[in-house]
Length: 313
Image (cartoon, rainbow, N blue to C red; front, side, top):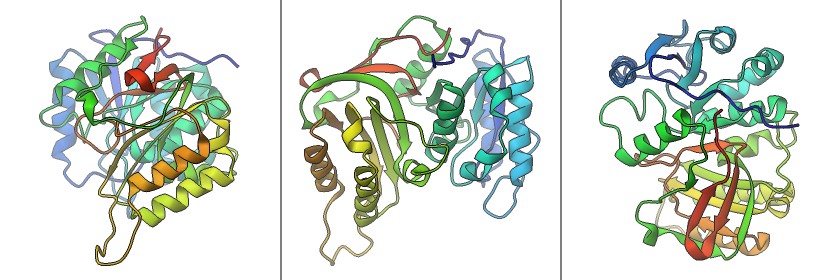
């Protein structure tokens, strides 16, 4: 199946805002993000359940799924940006109308818990989505210049971006050398692991796997990487890209522990595929936008990531 490529954004287009995971504690951030989008030339419509709270969820499952269906079904909405992650998108996957979404391919933006939704949309619809900045996290307040420039370049131009200029390339770590290409699949490691063995798990064969995480102790990161190994994901992919593993340290530093760096190095040696680490994406202010499903080339000799095709049409 050929990828479904969403249409590019133009100034004046309508952007829908949804909250498919956890509620945001500071509702003013929704307004701040909306003001940002309007200031740079877009119109905004906010989903009905945005701002609601149902335990640790931003509304009931049916309410959050309804918002997604409404935004995908509305011909005037050209892109959908998530407010934040947290937890909740895995609960929506059985409720979604994938035929509706496939008929209306649109830009969908988010990261963290949104990984489950993005991978399911690739599996069910082959829709290219954007692992990138969210409204209540990255667009509320001062926006990082690198994050901003790359994101808008990707979603507003139907020309391939080419090589991504990575800030401070000297911080990158080559865990296994080589050059390879494939389609970007991945996101938050916990969410990738949670989809293993389900009908929403995509086929990682010849993909470029990208991973990031936050707040997980090293032994938990180890366990999830082992799950990917035992599920044959690490042996099937063409290359691996690791972003930021924010606050992934032992709770008790007095106890012996492996570091995340050591765990990733072990995974690199097992996979024996090109493996580039410490990239700027994940739970960090400065982040690359990674189009899920896009064909990309990685060259560890040049610390290079090249987008081989446009992410929008």
